[in-house]
Length: 327
Image (cartoon, rainbow, N blue to C red; front, side, top):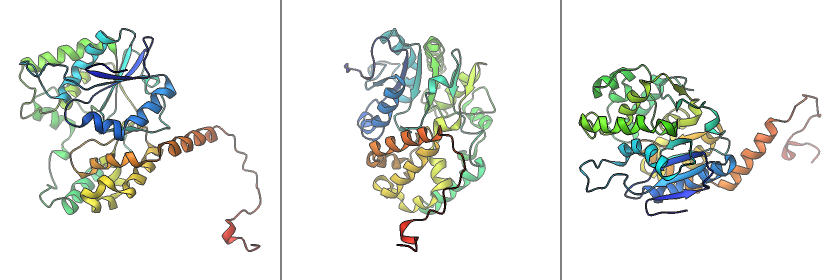
């Protein structure tokens, strides 16, 4: 279903759970369609979840309140409540996320009455400082010698909040995945207008909404920290597991090798996020090359196999044919 301002998928007017994103301006919607849409549609159909993609500004460009699409995310819950009365819970996703066929239903991971977010600081599968040092070192070596080996990349959460002039907390989530009850819409709408009143939108410290959203949401007690698999950061994955990809630099965009590495990461993650503006993020474009139907079949078959009870009984020596001395 399509309107002048949004596109709807797998939605009817009994839909209670909705994935929502903004793809406003430029090639955002086209890129989402090419590189992420197929994985989102499979996920939505599997769990009976609707999808809405807003492609026009939620605030008129002629308005004195107009702001970039990242900040407009704060106005999404209120707009959704007005457009879709059946929706009770919404998951706000960034467009540059690919969803693994193995991903469980995110709405079942967070109880009603709670915000669901994913830490990019704690409970990670890699040591945080070392993975960040790999990013800095490999960018400096293969992308640009101007890339600093010490920068805000290494800032602790409290340093980030302090730099932005916000209330401080010890944890920090990436705002690319955010699950909430639609009844929390006023928290976002009021937060947006409060930020505008204080003139922090697009200030030097707060060009993007993420620090502000972190401080806003963490000021509440009802925050549920989801498994890191629900927002695996490709920057971290690539630096930790596939450092050889840095040698490709700008060629990552069309690399079959990068595509296979992404496919491998989707075995170990649920939502794979290609956030950022350096070359690593351009690997997202290779997701178009992923054999989606083959991946889905493999993951579905493996999920069934996981439920098979194994006995450990011997079956005799079994070797590949080319090693079998009788052939």
